[in-house]
Length: 286
Image (tube, rainbow, N blue to C red; front, side, top):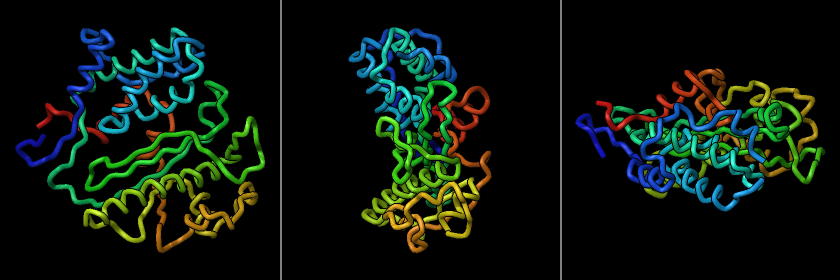
């Protein structure tokens, strides 16, 4: 839809209302956020099919109009084989959040011409204290003229480390986690630039990527001495792509100003609301 100012708004209100009806939550009290750490702690083993069906509905919204669901969907998807009755309660809580967020939408403001903005962040083993998860999380966020265009929240699938536990490799330092996140983000950003080229939308070359870790930027630019990253094979294609200055250029962004931070961890309260308001509009707003 469009408003009188000429802003374009993309929402999923009708689909959310259908999902709420399917789950018997039409009259539920809205929740302020889609996920709480306490819910994650409770998830362990049954009712898998129902869990996966409900999660699939949420993932559709997370990938189309509600980036605020990305972290919750990613965490719950990784725990999909450890389902107990409380797991379904956790998903219902997520849809209670959607009851209050069904009029939230992605907005392209008519007067915004900021172009392509790409941000990267990571959280080094941030879920370890909650679930014992040793993998780090990548957060990526891409906007074009202010409108969210692509986003990513996922556990890192590392390559190049020597530590293997059940075949999962992990980042061994925060700088390494930030480097893997930067690469994940570069791939996502390049995909968007390729789409732009196909439809004749101008995108910058090299693509600029905001990263909040100076050590990671130093490694990528080959100007820093990060001893805990010497095990990375510099001949790897992904490292070479990171360092190709014709493809990508990096700049330092303060962590508190980095929108990709939202996609690396569970946010609550005022912090969640700030990110939500920055990323999404509301159909009732003028």
